[in-house]
Length: 548
Image (tube, rainbow, N blue to C red; front, side, top):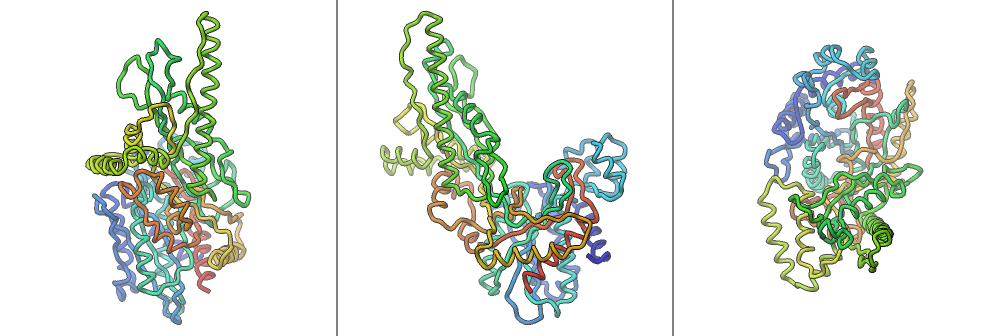
């Protein structure tokens, strides 16, 4: 990349970093305005101000906005268009402690960090002068700056540029992806109104070493997905003085965690790439007070990464895992009860427990068979009541719905209900089986192979971090979507996705990002040369290869 452009990217990166933009706060409005204003300084957009616009978040109390800028090449009349995305929000700055006021001031922060104890690796990078520190300088305002500078560069040569770019600077990526989810329908609208032929989505989010000592730099074609399989565990209450007369839901929940947590058996493998195994994000019983009665119910949910498994497949895997866990607990209890009776000289009876597992959809159908339309009426009333509490988390909203539906069932025996809690991020597997996928693979491959630099640049499948790239597509199989919607109680009520618009986009994706370390830590930093010279060149070449 031209040294002048590299310096422009660095300067803009620092300027953007100086604007505090913590996710879920009013400061996100400040960074949107900054991005918009920077575009409006460019000669091209002074001439075509209608090509830069704000896109409102849907139903957002903070009234946040994304910024969408379009660049229309004037060589020929090509409708080929590439979508560029980057997020402008960051995580918070509390982790900087007494240096918090310098978190978004890279030059001052560098001096202040010299006065505190740092990990050896971070200290070495700081002293080298080859790295820049600051909240968001790496994740991901460098990516925003890269796209903006490249757009300005091409706009100054607009008569030589054939094709179009649509750049969306979105917020809330570190939260609930409200920015991207609002932009997706806008992209579909633009596609229809302008006649754009979208080819692919390029993101410029961060990339880092995959393991300690890893010296490769990565380009990722495709992205990992995420589901949140959740378990509502119903046991049988009893007094602690008669423990074998009850069934502890905490023991069942623990058995599920033992079976699922970090179990690579549940990792997806595609083209030799392995998704991270599930990991629990919450486990709790639902007992609200202290007493000598054991809990009646418990709840837990997992982060479940996917490369190729759909909601329908994950549901079956988790139901089977819960069934196995349930049977393990029953077997353990029988053995302990037998031993206790033998040692105590008590007569032994058969414990009554049976392993029962069902999906939320199956629970709904059983209760519906008993209550008919009264069930739907009761659910609607509960939803309306829960929606009044604006502080209620999407996960807790889902749990309350599952709990209430179960409470209306006449069957009170122990059972595990498996359901999905928000959010849902579809994976995008770029196999190369159709035209756009093949073109993207070839374009990235050509860009990487053309680089003659000291870095070992590797292109792999599946960007490994949850990102807005997921919303460039969605499964089209009705049964897969049904498995998601029917087992996600919050869907269409408190949580929604523009699934039809995602299906219309149906685009392959690639992430070509800057290189750095410690995203979301106070030692967050990026390596200058690769981030400002090499990665932007890869982005530029990929764009030109796609449009060429």
